Length: 293
Image (cartoon, rainbow, N blue to C red):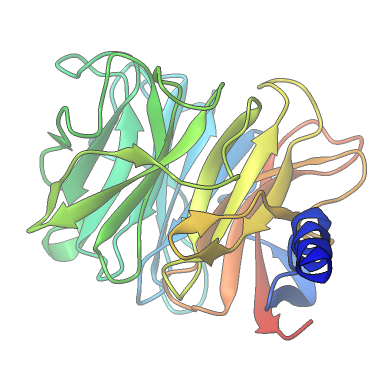
């Protein structure tokens, strides 16, 4: 009996098991479309269509848009990225955090436009013929609240919506939430279970190709450096607290967030980073692979 008790105490005191897989960066990060997408302004949260020919992101205070936060689009003509233009569904308010669905037919985004539930809400807009966009649709009270919701991302199978919110009932600050999608309709959102949500700020999350593993950003507070990107693994429906990603996705003295799974290459992540000593956030792409520890 004493021996059994000793074993139980030893197991209870042991640290959490190491992840069964590790994210390894392959090669150097590539600055995305310099002068077109990556400019002297802040560019954040690059999302690419499945055919790799359309890029969306949002910029802060970039001249030419109707508001301070605007979504921009560039299309590849087979040789280069064409000059960027603001999308048709921008408003004079805040429009940001675009994310293509896996089939490229829908773009999810955030906006504080009139008619929402309050604060920043989650919306979607259809992608129509010749790259035109339809009319934005609010995702409704199952996911939106009087607080802020942002950084939407649909899982590769289209069944789960992932986003961040500072609504009441979370662990503190902004937390990560998910909602099941049934027939394209979002069901009631719930915070991700486990240790992933903390009293700090968790945001800008993306599923990897398995639809379970999550890459996300964490900061003590918005506007306070550093902002770091982590990877969290799911076990029996619960996420661990996260593990810091290696360079170049985290660099000393810099900020890094806005990771997205590249819609055209499932072995590639896009993200935004401000390098040490830099003034603005640029867009990057980097390849990765999952390895055994």
